[in-house]
Structure formats: C-alpha cells, structure tokens
Amino acid sequence: MEVPVALIVAFSIELVLLVTLIISLKYRRSFIQHYPQLERAYDYMMIGWFFAILARSVFLSLDIRDVGNISIDERIYTIHALGNILFLIALMFLLAGWLNIINSVLRRYELIPVVEFGAGEMAKIKAPTGVYICNNRRKAYALFLRLLHGRAGLIISRTHPAQIKKELKVEKTPVLWITKVEGEGNIHPTRLPYLISLLVNFMKKDETNKIVLFDAFEYLALENGFEAMFKFITTLKDYALTNNATVLLVLEEEFLTKNEVALLKRELPLIDEVS
Image (cartoon, rainbow, N blue to C red; front, side):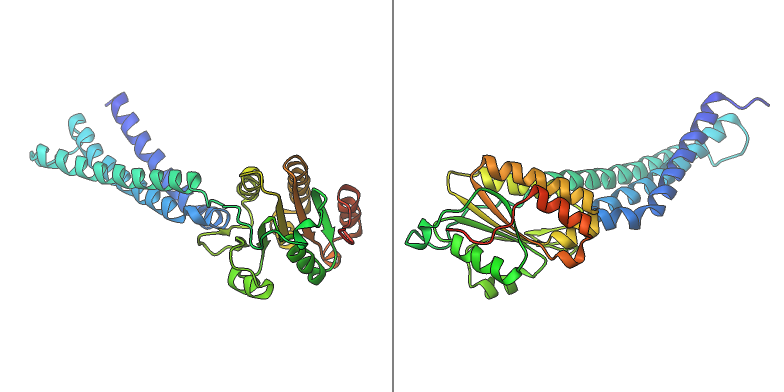
C-alpha cells in the first residue's frame, strides 16, 4: 500500500525534532563553556524540544491510525487532548528559554562614572588620552591612584573586586571581574564584544575625564587568542582617544612572545611617568 504524503511529512517532523534534541545534547557542554549565562535558557529549550517530540509522537499515532495500519482505541479526543497538552508544555519551555536568552543578551551591567577622590592638587595632574602599557603592576596601581583624583575610574581585573578594592583602598570605583563565575559585574572572558561595549559606554557616559586600570590582558589573550585581544586593545585605544579617557594596560611580558610584545609596543606607548 502506498504511504500517504501526510504520513511521510509527519515522520519527517518527528525525525527532525529528534535530531535537533540529539545535537543540542551533544553540544550543550561546549555551548555553556562559551556562554554560561545562557545555561538555563539552553536547558529550557532542550526540555521544550523533548516535550515537542512527545507531542508529535501522540499525533503521529493518530496519523498512522488514519492510514489504517494499526488499530487504536476510539478515544480519539483523549489522545488529541494529550497531544495538545504536551505540545503546550513544549511551547512554554521554548518560550521560557527564548525569554531567558533575550534577557541575558539585552541585560547590561550599567557602569556609573563616579569620582572617588575630589578635586585638589592631585587632580591637576594631566593624563595623556589613549591606552598606555605599564610593565610593572605595582607602579601601574600607584599611577592609577594618582590619576584617580578628579577623574571617574574603572578597574578591570582577574582579582576579586573586594580584594582589589581593599588593596587600592577605593570604595566607589567600579570593578569588572573577568571570571567564568556568574554574577553582577562579572564578565566571562570570552565575551569581548560585551566588554568593549561596556567600556565604550562608560567613556561616553558624561563629560568627566575617565581613567581605566586594565589588568587582565594575559588571561583574556589565553582565552581568546592574542590576535583577538590585539584587535580589542586597538579598538579600545581609538575610543579612548576620542573620548578623553586614559587606559593603563598592565602587561607582563614574560607571558607573551617577543613578536607579540613588539607588536603591542609598536601600537601602544609605554607610560613611564605622567607630569
């Protein structure tokens, strides 16, 4: 007996749903490693696919019954109701996952420029705009504190915010923690576009001069590759120049190759002293 086209389509839909679920399970770990903030959304959508498969299985049994290949109980309305309920559950989970994705993508950690130390003699120190390499972490921290007077500061670091604030003796200055741990103000190391967006918005926020301490280059280069980080830093430099901001880039050369260091120094000047 010739199989109706409708039944072939029904089987095809079931197969596509099943393959989609299998692929989702296969790549779940890799996806979450890159986008940990979307873990819940991913799981919601996988559950949604699962219930969609169950719903399609119920309706598929009705399609087979219509062909007359098997005998199914006459309680057709009950089977239809079960299929619709399962499909509704599937849609609810898919919707929850989609809303979670939208929320994660559109939600932004807003950086508010705050002047930690008011105007005074230290505030008269002029700082060149752009991105400058600091080879010594301790000197970079000291210079950042000097330039923080009369300026809105921002710290980007691999060190926990509470620890670095204690070390620098600052309270109001925001800290972006580069980490794979989720939390407010925490930035996953692979989210470079999101990080540059935060920095640019911070620089453009108001007319206050900005000073940024960037102490996470090596870790970000390890996670994203040097080429990606070089493009990131050159983009940041251009925005700093056009928005009257100074970025102190802490650089530990021993973690980079000679060619990488040479390339950075050709693009970015060293900052030995600010007068």
